[in-house]
Amino acid sequence: MRECETAITSKCDIHKKKICIFAVGHKAFQLPVNDAMYIKLMVGKHHDDLQSEYLVDCVGDNIADRNPRYNELTGLYWIWKNSHSEVVGLCHYRRYFTTCYGKINNQLFGVCNIFLQEKEIINILKSYDVILHNKTFTPRGNQNQLCVRDKVDEKSKKSKIRREILELVDETFAKIYPEDLRIYKKVMKRKYAHLLNVMICKKELLDKYCEWLFPLLFSIEKEIDRQFPSEEHARCMGLLGERFLDMWVEKEDLRVKECFTVNTEKKDWKIW
Image (cartoon, rainbow, N blue to C red; front, top):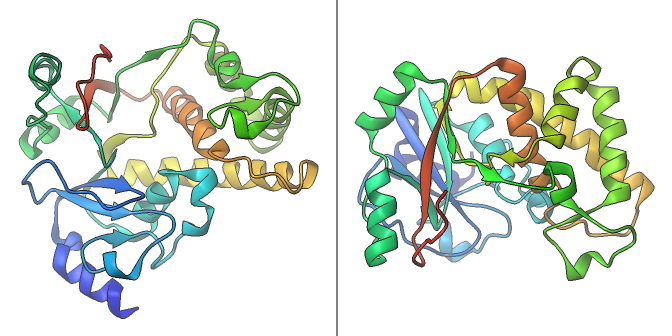
């Protein structure tokens, strides 16, 4: 084990925590809550001067080098392979799960000081399998919402995926998980999604999800690189992962508790 990994693991003592909610970031940030359950996880390109303060996703079993395409999913992969807590979660460095009161407090006063606590998470997971971000509505359907026109310059719309690449995704999914193709088509046509790749659930459930998700993403990525070489495809796999999460929830018939999230850097006027 690398020296920095030993120091960070010892500092956070993550293997002894019943619940760990990993706040994933790509730059230096401070947690907005004084709660040992929340742990800072730096993803992607790392700086040596940050490794004493953050867990980093470039140690242990990891895919940190894929961060430009996978975004927070390199953090999810790290949690899958390296965390042993009973309950785990992923949120963003500036977006956290909150209560209805926390959402209202932020919208009225611009204050973000109410976040899900351990007791609330334990109570929710007694009745539900997974906590997800509230639905985001996509009136044109998920696949159309993901898409830009054929041959549009990706650098101008990094949050979208070319239609021809989505067609490749269709084909690859059908090859990897033909038994789930009906669900794939259903979710891609659906007019809402649980976005952001944020979630809280028991670790054993997250493990099962990752065992299903990452072989699919790796196969899609390999095929994209084969057919569209020398292109960046920034954020592509992270965007696809958002839709695949809903497919897996549907496939496993999971009981979902939708929770508000709040952006700690601004008044978050979105109702979801």
